[in-house]
Structures are given as structure tokens and as C-alpha cells.
Length: 182
Image 1 (cartoon, one colour):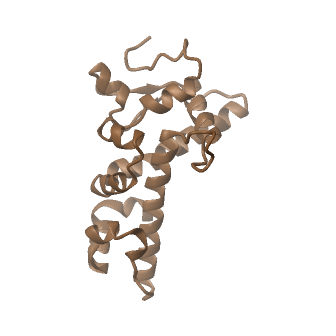
Image 2: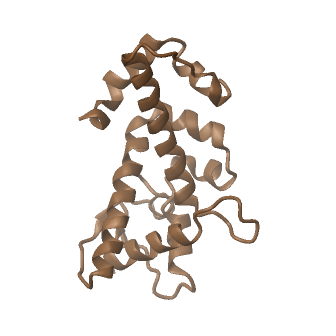
């Protein structure tokens, strides 16, 4: 087996192991400690990583659908340096089809953050944060484009550090996020 592939053959719960090892290395500690404000700022500073979670979720969902249809898919190269890759000193991590299905099902099983008996999936947590930022930015852009009230104060002023006015939000979208409007 290639060093770029996480060996989950002997794992009691492959989804749980993958869920921890696939966390982007740069934000591993903050993800484990659930430092949401830091993660929001990090995603705003690194929009490519934030948008990568959209493709990641889509790929896992597609793999699960193919598995349900009794079909097979291809491997997936992770678009960020994972905790696993950093620990091994390599540049990429490859997720096999079966691992994609295991990770997706683990993320769905441990989706809800308010169940005290069940922990929330780390990758689900990151996905929820990144997707919420994208939705917020889309909503603020819609408000700006339609001359509606533009209010960023509802997110504990985290967005205000990045977007003190409507023009700064438009610049951010034009520079980094045009892909979500195409």
C-alpha cells in the first residue's frame, strides 16, 4: 500500500480514524479544541481551503451514492495537507473509494453537535463552518446588490474585522470567491 494512503484495515472504526487524520494540519489543534472564532478567521484568510470543503463534501456524497447503487468510484486526492501527511512528512493524502464511503457515513452519523452522548465529526464541524461562511457572504452580497440593509454585526463582529463596509466585501468576493457565483 502506498504511503499516501491511510491504512484503516485494522481500525475498529475506520470512519473515526479518517475523520481525525484528514483534518488540515494547519488547523488541527483548533479543530480538536473547537475554536470556532479562530477557524472562521482562518477560513476568511484562506478562501481556497474554505472552498475546498465544498468539493470535498460533494465527492464524499457522490461516493456514498455510487456505493448505494452498487457501483465503484475512484480515489480522491485531498486538496490540503492533512494531519496524516504532516505526520508522515509527505505532500499528499489519497482517499480510496471505500474510505470515502466510510468517512461520509461517519460524518452523517455524528452530524449533530448538540447530542451530549455523541461527539460531532471533526470534518463535519469544519464543513459546517466553511459552508456557513459561504452562505453568509452570499447573503450579504445579495443584500448589497439589491440595496437592502447590509448588516454584519450578527456574527459577533468577526466579519467586521474583514469587511468594515460593503466595498470591502465586494472586493473580497471579486478577488477570492467569484467561483461560487459562476
